[in-house]
Length: 213
Ligand SMILES: [Zn+2]
Image (cartoon, rainbow, N blue to C red; front, side, top):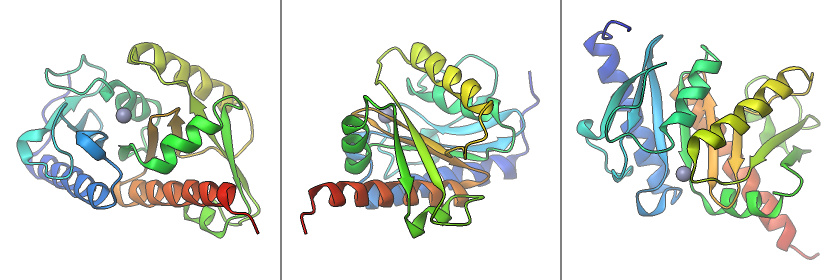
């Protein structure tokens, strides 16, 4: 059991969660109270949106302080487990954001059979930490949607273990088919930059598919 983090760390993390929800809502990424947002408080806790809250108009009471490696608090969203796995896997992750944007839902549906969608040749790819050239190829993994989140989490963990052994660029996010996008970063600013870049690039793929010269 971790000791409770200091008040100012908790406050800062809650404010970052509220700001992320508000930004995503203005972008139209989280219709009908969907999506969820979390920011790391310290080594043992994350601030995480509760189930059912309107993520575009969060109050402090809508953000739970969830200890890592412990069972989910009451009122947690079903997908909280996916957030916690990302933090537990990588101690450098400082924020995880999840949205149900149109481009994420559509592209993940169209590319489900391949199991990934490749980004390559786009200048905007350089928004991802560690990517220096548009020539890089980034494969965003796509998982089949599942209402059984523990089972989905197992499939995601298996994929993570597999890709650790390859020397490909790792994507700071993944898609769940016909559902949405998870993206993360070392802090909330980087996580939001990644989220925004993913969504813009997925939108470009959509437009490119529809565009007939
Ligand atoms: Zn979702």
